[in-house]
Image (cartoon, rainbow, N blue to C red; front, side):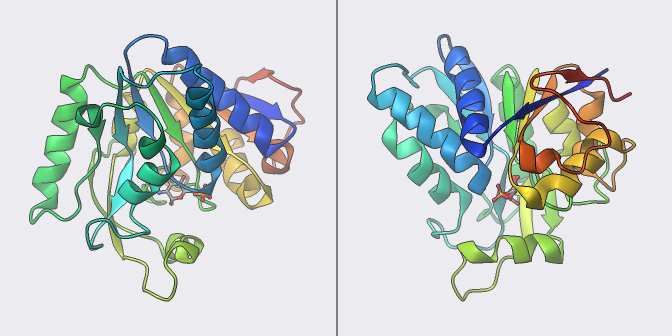
Length: 253
Ligand code: GLP
């Protein structure tokens, strides 16, 4: 297995590349796994731009979002459902019936997690899963220590993750729990693209690419996937052991 690392100059280049892959898949019905976070915003902005320019239709796209906080009132400004509406869904011709999000307001999160896994299977699995990365190496909300065999479930957020996401919450406390696709759920996707930009991600990217596959760095699990690419800007690869040239595939194991 090999983990491809694509190094581009800037965050804008990363967004252009990832959006380009999405636009390619959108030419036919597809199932896309979506992520939230600041890194994804310029990617979604490019997709909206393509739609407005008449270059993309989202009518036949089915989506599954990675995760959602537990305990927020429906429609909370920091919820991921709101994030997705504002970043993408409200601006394109997506079919609401094809949009899937984890509902963290349900009384039984375990049943909701099972429902989600079933819905992904019923849709035929995910063609391309988009990921960001936490500064601690998390993917989705799979924090360090998450089993590599984990599936969709309720998790407790690491204090550093709650700190990193505090700016989305004004003065309110950041939730302590979330529902997230598991690491094994993510690895079931036929293709994975992880976008990482900026110096705050350099350590996490180095652990994911150069380190061993370990629950301590959930993103390192991508090394075991047959078609995973980390798309980074130059700042995000500053911690890698070996310098890499643009687009060079890097065997990591
Ligand atoms: C949250 C999300 C992750 C995302 C991470 C990085 O924790 N659950 O899916 O990868 O944020 O976010 P950002 O791009 O804002 O650094």
